[in-house]
Length: 141
Image (cartoon, rainbow, N blue to C red; front, side, top):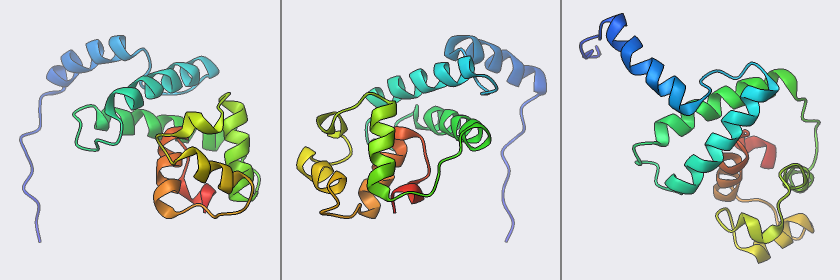
């Protein structure tokens, strides 16, 4: 089964589109703590705009930056094995968040139950939390 490829743009045409994008976004590859901070801030702004709309035109930009952040975190931050509730608690502390700040991921009462080990994290909530914190969903499962 073959794929039909679209016409490949000339490298100079890609460059003309890439440079303004790179200048506007501020970071396209995460190599330093400064790049990391810029990418995280941009991800937060994109999450505010996009919400749960995976068909939003900026969703690809969000995914691209999240992949860059993930690669940086995988190389520079070791997440020790921990219970999913402890991972969530750690990430909330690192981001200065309270339970009610995670309303885009789950109701406050559900977050409370998770943090108190009264309820496990569902796959759907794990995906939302992973998206929110730019980590892999399996850290919550």
